[in-house]
Length: 346
Image (cartoon, rainbow, N blue to C red; front, side, top):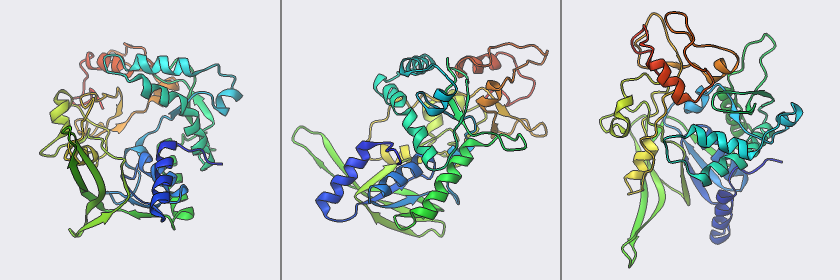
């Protein structure tokens, strides 16, 4: 039986169906892991779902993730006799968020629901049975798939996205309509001002633009924004330049699609934004020696260091604990005055 990732959303969809006497229509914006997960869960609850992706294929940055998923209390941990618990997971999470405004309630949700997420993916056919201890963690709790028979590592992000998309197309095509090459350009809404001055906004659909330039309005009972990453935002109204301009000089491993669309759509309605300046600088990326200054890199995953990879400076010396917090490792790399321009971060 598949576990529910978010009972709140399930209850909301059930209520819509009861009050309207019909199948709820849910629009999900973004075809990454969050978007496809939301679409599957909504469809499992009986909703008719429209999944919208601006690129030519689903996956987004989720398909680029390669290290694994962190969770405690899983079957894999029990089989490996790993002593772990929520207090350790939450302690490590708080420690990694040093310098930020870590929300205890969100950390608790991340911790308590982590094993459910692993079970949910396992039920869909993702074999997350291999454990490793990666940067910032005090226990082996990063789950990934076993290597291929020839020893080649399995790209876990791509594998997850491939599995979810296959499930949608093979088993849920009657409930989920996928629209690729389609951009959401506005949220259709209505608003009213309460006597106390608070403006209430109800989103009732989206305006879309397809590759041929045609604009269309789609109405829905609920709209889920499952997109918003902006670390490759080079647009005129760049969110990266606005909130973390000091990082714009570094290369990025984000795809060209990461231009903050979801954030911009929501903020246009007056939605309050939080922690927009909390952009992480990942320590390692893979550099093309023929083009070291290319502003887009492929991620040098945490799993490389978790499997024993070490970092050396141009003198051949180790200079940092490779499994320390990402912020610590990144700053140590920056201080090394790397030989190649553009190689200081990702």
